Image 1 (cartoon, rainbow, N blue to C red):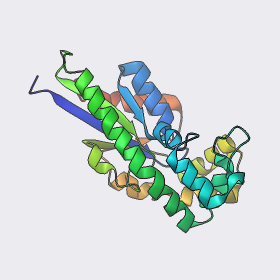
Image 2 (image 1 turned 120 degrees about the vertical axis):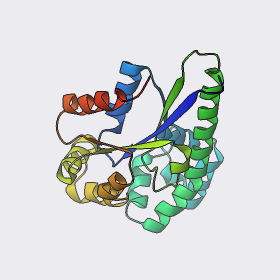
Image 3 (image 1 turned 90 degrees about the vertical axis):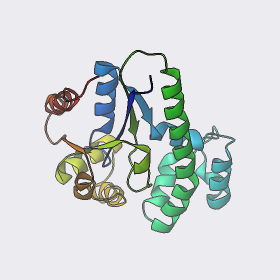
Length: 209
């Protein structure tokens, strides 16, 4: 179908704002295909990968767990306190994630070539969509927002972090207010999940599925 529309939604936001809740809802309720950058980021540092080998060369074998997997908690302690080290790590992982997202998107479109629908929709869940300069992969951008105090509390509870550590992790990302300014759709997750999903339903209802 040459006149088919392909919607590639870049779903992003801040850490602990609710991206996973929305992507799960879109998959379960509307059957949309979800491609999660975090999955590819974990794939990038799988035991035996060249990226993991580079990380070990830089930080030593203590950066690994006993089973050979990356000690993500220990790595987080390094990069969230050191912008230069965080930048180095991102330069290793972001190109890999970008390539995998492109490959997966193209594969989805190809597999769906015989499906008789006028619109194909795929959602790229990319926490660092703006920071990693991946906005060109999308036809539209959805940002999930919540009040900063709510975000901080959720992150502390979710990851068992102190206030200072949670705040440091939030500060490594582009401020939510700036992300909202760049968005086509803003979803406010400061309240309940029911409220959030009602907003999602309202947005989806504007389009032909």
